[in-house]
Each structure stands twice: as structure tokens, then as C-alpha cells.
Image 1: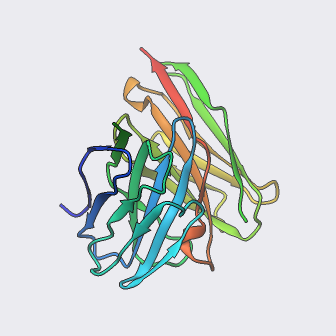
Image 2 (image 1 turned 45 degrees about the vertical axis):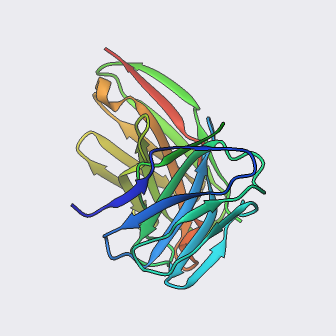
Length: 114
Length: 114
């Protein structure tokens, strides 16, 4: 089945530690996105990538980093500079990076602080 | 930039009744409006979408209406069932810009009581 796979489902971070969230898609989509979801709030864009080897900051990029070395993969690193990382993180993809395209989501990674 | 407001934040209905969720948007350039359903611990799933050249779209028990003049669009669910209980998000996207400009409402938690 084609889709987006996020791993792990749950992740715990210690103080001062960087952690990396995995996102893989086999939909052959060009564009990929990372969102943060906090309780009772909508989705806020962290980073997006319209094509391999290219990515752009979203609204809340501070404390996060990404890479896009392969079309299928768009990992997100939550660095120690992100002081409030506890949230539900969602990865999405769309056919292209142009407007008017539906985004397809993975089932998320829940990150908590130890 | 685009701003999407969604109401109500919570909605409780009796099984078999109808549910209506409303969203307003600010950017007249937006012309793609998807609706997502998010179940507990899962990622959002696209359930229906509408483009600005259409005023209404229906898919079995769900329908979406769009009023471009007033800049609002609504999700209608008829004959609600307990499995419709979830959080629903609306979104708006301008067609000729990068897809990263898709903006989401804050969500509506729908509870269908058996």
C-alpha cells in the first residue's frame, strides 16, 4: 500500500539532546512537509521541501532542522535549542509543491520530554 | 497571509442528527478547500475537498459548501454515526502559490452520542 510512514510512534528526549523523527513516503510525491500539532490547536508548518536537496523554513522553524537527500525521505531533527518540544509531529506529502494540491499525512510521532 | 477560523471548537450531536462545521478565510486568492478527519492517535485523513469554481460537493453523507463572496465554507455530515466522532480540520490554499501556504483551522471535536 502506498503511504507515509512515520517512526517512531513515541519518542522521549532528554535535556540537551537532539532527536530525529523519520518520515518516508512511497507515493512518488515531490513535496514533503513537517507540522507541529499542540492540543486544541491547528497544524503549524515547521519546514517544507518542494524537491530533493531543497527545503524552506515554515512558520516555526527555530530549534528544528531537516534534510532532503532522497525523494522518499524527509527526516526532522528536534535540536536542544527547541525549548518546548513536547508535541505531536506530523509529516505530509503532496504530488507537487504547487498550491491547490491535497496533502497526505502520516500517523505522527508523539515527542515528550524526560 | 491567509488566516482560517473554524467554529465551533466542540460539537456534540445525537446519532442520526446532522452536524455542521463552519470555516472562514481571509485571502481571496485561496481557491482550494480540503477537510480532514483526525482520529485519536492518527494523522489527518482527507475526507472531501472543494475548489472555488464549485459551490457545493457531496460524497454520500458528507457535503461541503463554499461561499466565495462571504469567504466561508462549511462541512455538513448527515445521519451521523458514532464512528464519525473525531476532530475535523478545514484548510485553505491559494492555487498559484506554493503549497506551503495551506492554512488550517484550529479543529472541531465532534462527538456523536449513540
